[in-house]
Image (cartoon, rainbow, N blue to C red; front, side):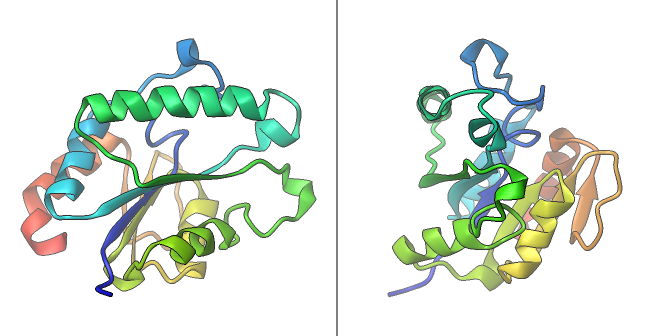
Length: 177
């Protein structure tokens, strides 16, 4: 079976603006240019996955049902833009639970690799926290992009916004993607 390229995306701060424990549709706001960015990767035949720590579930801030309702709505909005997400994986645990799935641990990536033949050396991860970029290294995902104004160590690239990332990749896609 031929291994495919993948783009792994954090949710809060990447797909949507991170307002802190986003769990309701009315609080969910897509980041500027996220649809355009995802289309670049789709055009280059990447599979798209969302990998997200959702400790708000473990902390009791919202329920798994709340998360699932919001996720279904988000996936439909992405489908409306001709963006298909292969799978959404999440860690519902609080940090003190020391689970294997919470980023930067590799459990969510391992879960995806059980179902999909992914070439991690041709794949990318986009996140807005050090734990996202650390996950890319721990899982041996070759390329990583950090988003945000705080310094994140060891990312292949760093941009202040998704819009900045999109502009850069649009202009360099034939070399990078």
